[in-house]
Length: 231
Image 1: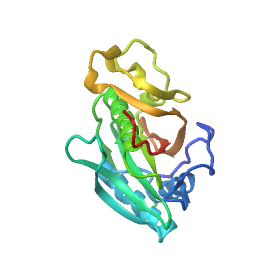
Image 2: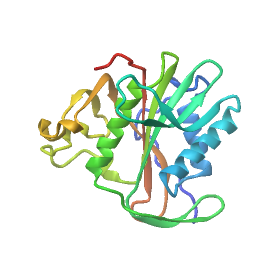
Image 3: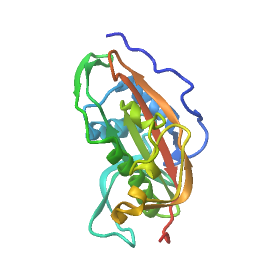
Image 4: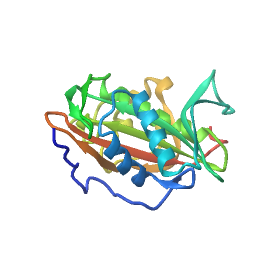
């Protein structure tokens, strides 16, 4: 299969702004990652590939997978997907790889993929927002956070046809902004309430474009700051 580049202009692309461990821009890393791995078999596959590309771009950054966190308000054990340790700063990263069914061949060395459909999209939204809230709590003043979602589920980046859904506060479509207290089902499920300290405009970026239905992959990235005293 001949690889095709995803269309540009989906969101606000920038190479400035927060860096990973103070050294590497996310745009640069994602461009390199897309060349090496346009599709992933699993979320774990994504985590490993991301860490490998980061090391290739900046060998001075050390990566640690599944690092236990000690947030003051933690309930039980909490673990971070990836901790990137730079010479002066750190970046805590949480990954989400949410797929819908797609089968095909991708990569410079052709590799077969058979992606399955995951759970409902409302749970994907809840999971991603939960990652943002967790990252605001983790770490220290010399550490930023990054919530990264890669998906071929177009329903996550397109505007909803219905507005009165239980996950309406958690919508992730292009151009939306997440901020403040987010209620699940209008507050009928308090365990799913999430509170964000900062404001996060959402801009989706192209990742890769593969043959066949559901072959378009995009990513959503949100950088966070540490808020140790959040309620």
